[in-house]
Length: 443
Image (cartoon, rainbow, N blue to C red):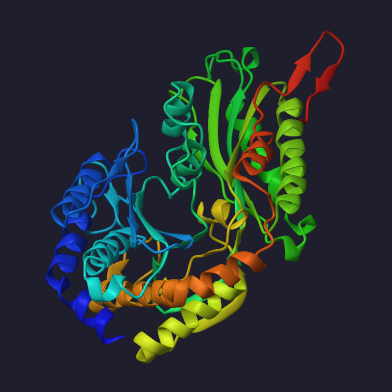
C-alpha cells in the first residue's frame, strides 16, 4: 500500500496540471483532438508507446508485467458536455466538463506514472491496458449521424466504437472510475436507444393560405403529448425515461412549418423493456402524424447497453477503498442508476465496473457543476484504482482469474453483442399514404 501511495504522490502536481488543462479546453465527442493529443503527449513523456485510434480521437497502451495472467482495461473519457450557461463554459461553443471527465483523465495519467514504478509493477501479473476513449456523452446526434454516413464511425459511443474496431481485443476485465459527490457504486445503470424523429409537412403562408399547408409542428407537439399520455403504462421496474428536445421547429413565423426534428433517447433497465417502450412510443408518434396528415421518419439507433456492475468487482473496489482511502466511506447503492453509459456495452461481454469517486459539487450536467476537491477526485481516485489493480493482479492474478472464471456473460462474444444491437437500427418513413387509406409501418 505504501508503494502505491508514494508512487501516485510523486505525480501529484502533474495530475493537478492535467485536470486544469483539460477543464480549460473542453471538446465534445469525436471532436476531442486537442484533448487526445495532449493526454497522449503526457503518456509519451512518461515513456509509453501508444496505439492511436485511426481517424477518431483516443488511444491506448498495453503494459506487460512479463508474468502470465489476464488483461485489465482501465479507462478515462475524453469528451465534455454542452452547457452554455455554465460560468466556465467555452463562450463560443458552450462546451464544458460538467461531468468530470477531466478528473478521470488526470487520474489516468497518475496511474500511468505510478505504473512506471517497479515497486508497484513487480507485484502484478498479466497485462494492463490504459485507454483514453472518446464520446461517452451521447449528444450531438446529428453530428454523429453525419460521421456514420461518411463511414468514419459505426457507433455513437466511443467504447462501443473501440470495441467494434478491435481496440479491446484481448481484454478480460474492464473498469473506470467516474467523478461524483461521493465514493460509491450502484448495481448498474439503464441503457438507451437514440432516436431522431422528423415530422415532414407542407409549407404554406401562415396568414393568407394556411389550408394549403400541413403543419409539422402541430403534429410533433401532438406526438409528444401522446407519448406523455403513455407514461403511466411504463412499468416502474423497467425504469423507462423519454426526454425529447426539438432541434428544428420551423424556419419563419409566417410559414407553416414543413419540417420539425426531435432528438431523444428511450432509456430502460433492460433491452426488453427499452424495445417494448420504444414500440409504444413510435406508435404514438406515428399516430399523431397520421392525424394531421403529415409524414414521419423515425431513425432509431442503438445507443448504450444497460450496465451490469460485476458483484465480484464491487467487492474488489470496496476492499480497495477500505485499504487505501478508508476516510471516503465507500457506499454500495443497491439500485439501478437512470443515467446511461457505454460502459454498459462492455459489461455484457466481460466483468466490468463503473464506480464513482468523490470530490465534485453541484448538479451533474448542470451550470453549477465543479471539481471541488482535486485531491479526492483525482489523486485519491488514482490510488483507489491502483489498489484495485493490485488486488486483481497480485499473487499470479489469482483474484482476476477467479472473477473471469465465475463470470456469466449476457453475450458470448463482441460479435454476438454487436450483431444484436445492429438489429435495433431502423429508419425511414413510417406512413404510406394512398388515395383512400394509409398504411402504418411500426418496424
